Length: 221
Ligand SMILES: CCCCCCCCCCCCCCCC(=O)SCCNC(=O)CCNC(=O)[C@H](O)C(C)(C)COP(=O)(O)OP(=O)(O)OC[C@H]1O[C@@H](n2cnc3c(N)ncnc32)[C@H](O)[C@@H]1OP(=O)(O)O
Image (cartoon, rainbow, N blue to C red; front, side, top):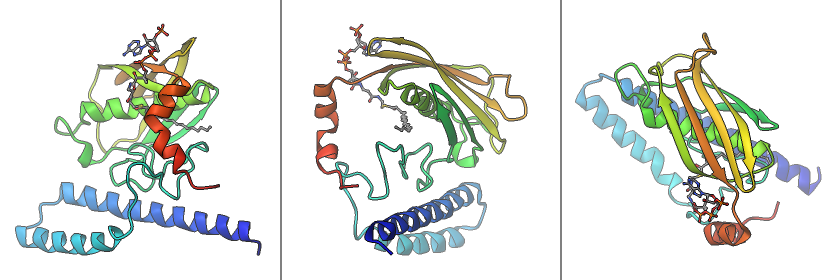
């Protein structure tokens, strides 16, 4: 086996392990949010969780280093809080995007509750920001969100399969506008939340100022 095949195999195995740990953490969060177990049970669980966390904290990166399993330009972000399969706080949303149009699917658990039974409004905004970002990136005009307007028309139900959509509607120099919506998978044409986002492509000096340390610390592919 060649070195490059071995290193691809290692990366694949690492990503699978990260996703497996992510699944376990999401299960932990959902159970910890929904549980009505007695205090002694909670104290025992807290001790076990701290024991599990300790070895993970022995080798950590700081904010100027990408995760070793990430591929920034390839769009792989294992710990992104919306799509990251390794993120404890990501639903995670599964997104398909091409040519400035994105569709996504997820189900939100009790950890995302705002009003009883329904999603927190900030969570809906986060999902839509990500959706719009994928539409914008795949339109060939990647940029950062500078404005996000959300309209909450109906509450977003928890424990219900959701369908998310986004598309680019305008490109005006460095400014790109995209719209998006959250609906249930059962009635995808009835928008519960809609959003319009304005994204701005970074000038080289802005990219250098904001992301210089990360680009300098990038590991060779
Ligand atoms: C290849 C495979 C791909 C695979 C697929 C990967 C998918 C990967 C998806 C990632 C998806 C992530 C989705 C999350 C996206 C975030 O959440 S990004 C994080 C949140 N956003 C931020 O932190 C941005 C913070 N803002 C800033 O740092 C600065 O505003 C910026 C972006 C550097 C721009 O700098 P600035 O000095 O404000 O603006 P400037 O460059 O002078 O202005 C550019 C234009 O924008 C306008 N503008 C700026 N701000 C505003 C505003 N708030 N309102 C209106 N207009 C504005 C200016 O007026 C100006 O207009 P013109 O004069 O050109 O007509």
